Length: 357
Image (cartoon, rainbow, N blue to C red; front, side):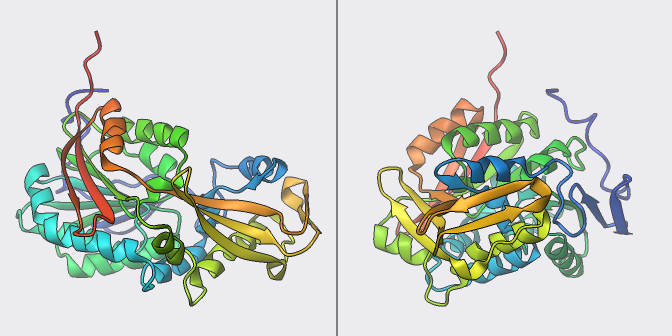
């Protein structure tokens, strides 16, 4: 990786350049599709992860299948639930320390992984706006409709903002970040989404992040911290049943995408804290003995009564251990912030790769 970004930086005074899969709305908004516009077909995915996950014991599914348009809308609702402390706690930390983050990084383009409605991003954009420098936002999300809606609203609210949005997974989006619009870049990964990855997957993810950074660039990470089992389980079993609907919607997504016949009434949401592994687990439990087919995958799956599909893990972190993992990938912690209850942590790092011998 080059130590200089001058060859990669594109002047913010120029329109965002199109590619063959872009929609250009104005010289301030470009939406690049790495997934099909209906968010149901991934050019980088044939569904083999579904085949593998449903063919093994115990059965699993990757959490990326939560996020069709309906799933993304449901997750936005989850973030507003009284039991779901994560979003409001992280938001409060950002509101308190955004000016300090911006002071440490200086002007830079903001890349957000899993941006959703970009609610928390506004806090950072407000702080960067105080620097009286160009504003460039590069959200990456699998939901095209949410990306479009949030981008259009952001353009109305920030007169100098330019947006290059990417409809795609983190992996696809990070690979497309070779062109920079500003001298420095900060990649943000908020909401403790890192907890959805197993330890070995975290290592791969950090490799993908640093591949999108140049020395001196920044990575901002939000993580959920260890706390009581009762509080954790309440957050994933809300009284309104929104999380349950979100979990079951994964099966509806698979039905539509892969020609499946999952009967959603024959599965139920089950979430609990696995104390030894320090992780919340979400499962879809079969109410009966049944057979499910996914025609386009040529897959038939047998379920026993009470057999489950693990649809998600959400690992809970300890900041000292996490900082060691980040350091091992060349991401040096500049500062960390938590709330008064020590429920949630925000870590700002700078990419300082170890020179090759």
